[in-house]
Image (tube, rainbow, N blue to C red):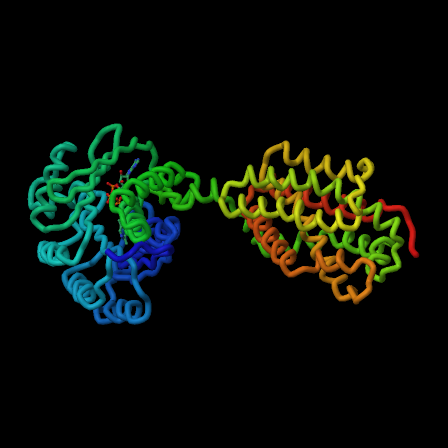
Length: 490
Ligand SMILES: Nc1ncnc2c1ncn2[C@@H]1O[C@H](COP(=O)(O)OP(=O)(O)OP(=O)(O)O)[C@@H](O)[C@H]1O
Ligand SMILES: Cc1ncc(CO)c(N)n1
């Protein structure tokens, strides 16, 4: 087996089921449900539905070989699942291709006994199927199929199944996933048998008619998970758990009046949701666009215009700076709380460095300018902004808190970027303009945007909405903060 891959490329070599419940159609759904990229080479076209097989058309094996080579000449294959192989020639063609392509994982679901109990393969073909086993990592026979490999009568108890599977595994040197679904009883046990080593997986029998294609689905799911994780035991356990949920929801699909298909994506539909979530980049664009009114109002303020062109009075600037010095002390406490709540080391360090920056870099500017004069009491506007941040911190959701502090970076960096160009020699507020137009502040802002928009993209709808509201509220507080200083230009 090669190293685990994130999205395994899995090839199904099987027959078709036009009703979509078994064969390559089921395989492709199962592979996708397990996070793989599904590919399919058709061995036989089968006219079947939920009631049974009507007829089978086997295309020339030369064409089968062409399909197989078309895939392996181009695509790196991480796992192969083999299903219905209609006859000796087909088996030999697949066998020869396995020798050429040497895929790292091969799972064989030996489709040879129909649910009705009828043998689908003649003795000659059964022999050819045995010839495939040296090229296979795992076979997934049901009770009658296991008996064919063992050349014994079908097992009638789970104990007999395990013993027979051990003999088959030892005789052919192949792993066996023995399935107890065909035995009577409340439970549906499966076992991974590798020689004398047996690992059992239990499950409760679900009362349903939706069991068409369970074997196909299980084997392709195992092939996919094993390529992703490298573990046969994990693959079997995970595939069985997933299949049980899919079987339980099969009847919801209302497909056919016989043995219906399983619902391959039932778990994903229930817990992954069907709406396409926003990406972090879309959150960034949407939120920024949705505060365009606040940003325009900030740009329009006499205070901001006066700050940019240097006509703002020293009194107005001093009043603002004194309030901002008061603000920064609690703002740093809020960032320290964001650091305390952050789940990852990266975020913890990032918010801690923000707190440090607010106290050291930003506050230094204020102290210099204010010349050590103790600031006045906080204004109603300063208090309102801090109360919003402190209350958000107190509620304890680090994602909402991160969204609430983002405007402190983003609005200032945006303003700083535009005002920086106005910081000529001798500009009275040059230091202020340069602090927020500084590349280091810009890069901290970029990081804050990355952290918050990623959290928003991953959050559930209610949390993302709370994040947005906290973000918007902070933007409005920023506007109020710039609007609060007494009017005055020199
Ligand atoms: N009614 C059920 N409830 C729970 N699990 C089931 C049920 N029927 C089958 N399974 C599970 O589905 C998997 C496939 O088992 P089964 O023995 O039916 O294979 P199969 O006969 O090869 O399938 P197919 O019907 O596709 O030929 C096993 O893991 C089995 O435990
Ligand atoms: C093509 C095909 N393969 C396998 C099965 C067994 O479920 C089926 N019904 N059809």
